[in-house]
Amino acid sequence: MILTAPLAALGRTTLAFLAAIGRVALFAARALSHALRPPFYGRELLLALFNIGWLSLPVVGMTAVFTGGALALQIYSGGARFSAEAVVPQIVAIGMVRELGPVLVGLMIAARVTSSIAAEIATMKVTEQIDALVTLSTNPMKYLVAPRVLAGLIVVPLLVGVGDVIGIFGGYAVATSSLGFNAASYLKNTIDFLEPLDILSSLAKGCAFGGIAALMGCYFGMGSGRGAQGVGRATKGSVEAAAVLILAANFLLTGVFFSI
Image (cartoon, rainbow, N blue to C red; front, side, top):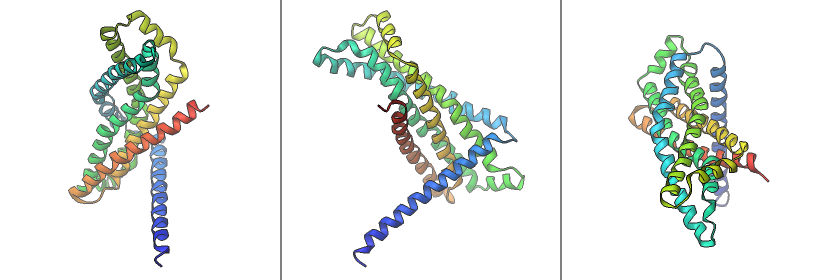
């Protein structure tokens, strides 16, 4: 018994993990199914697009511009060790577009939007507003979940594109004002170095990260326990799960797009 107890605990943990993955996969399939079938709630979709997209622009812009500027300083400082300072435009561009832009936007969306969605839906569940929707013959998955997931899939790639541009501009501003780079040459090197696959991968990551962020907020909100403690657990769990899944998805998508 002593020898088998650790194995039994490992087995229970593995089964619980696989069961959680299955529940999330089924929830995602239901959400996408409802998002593609009428009736559609246009007002809820527009509201979700506004909340996820427009209201996230300030934090995305500030994060991207400071990241681009810091990246330019770091590359210039590191490149100076082996006389490669001239690569700043190229590395800032590829670093922001391929990796930093999508990941940072995804994490900011997880921090801001996922927590908000989870808290909102969990509060509705605690106060029995979701039960009221059911009594009014309104499917909560279609009314609450589908518009938010669809909005995440649509608007986060746009935020990633904006973040990429602002991040590159942050590097450009630092390089031309503090590091002695010529403005026209910097922009030419940036444009010439980027390839369509870099931009495509960035937007695809944004779509995946937006779907994950919205989905985790809805999943944990719908599965919330009772009371304020249940709302708190749902909010915390949604952000943790979204952040981990975004980083894992980033690794997988990078391998898909850029595997040698």
